[in-house]
Length: 354
Image (cartoon, rainbow, N blue to C red):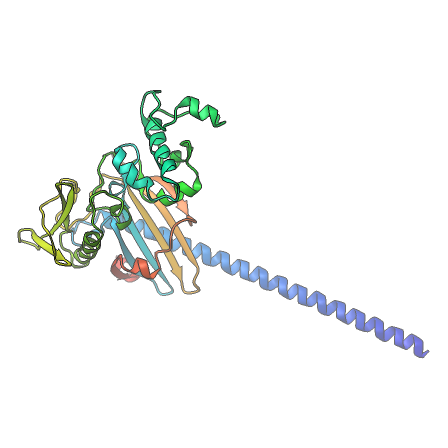
């Protein structure tokens, strides 16, 4: 009899243990599912806020008050919600290097940014030039149909302008390691051989020949101050292969900027955008990249990167979307100490309710 009781006790203990394990497993599964649901909800909410940033950017690009209109020179604007913050950065495509129009010197400065040997850089530059030209003549260290076939590739150079920056990845010798550092510096929408210096971000200015590092830092700081205070953006001029800088207060003639004892003199740059208005606000005719990033109070982030241009003719929207990316992996967050240096204006969300 005692043996039967002992067996029953062991059986009960096993059943209790099994039930405990099942209950724990069920609780863990529920917690995981709850976390997934919460994460999905946060991601959806973050993306909705990021999409609202795109609508705000389009609105502010058309603002009738030039002092309020947002600039497309890599300036960052912040909107604070009750439980989230939104940062929006606008970059004019004219402030980037057009891979269809840039000359060989400009391409040399661009390709010098990638981590490959000088000989490979030379081959890449010439392969790019061979891709976009209309002939089948091979440049020295370049690549035409024969070279692509010898490399085992099933395609040949387009012998016409690049249709997108992604097409650059097809060029012989190009790979992800080379392309990624260039992705945010290049465009096919500028349609001009020179960079619009007034719109160019710091990363592009650092590439250009004749640019002085101290001058770039002075310019970026002065451009941010002008955006904060609603003043005209500083302008560049190229003299004897060297860039100089000037700035003008409202109603005043351009004056010189001094930095580290060297005088930066100048007048309105011939390379600057003539389509900018008096306070440096962007022209609406060119293509613009908008980066909109939402940061929720639980540290969830959601990012949209959208390329737009002003729509031609009548339509429901004044802008045409050329590219739409959700959470681009390669881009740095707008919520960093480094990006704080580009923050020019901060709003409370109710300011846009009207």
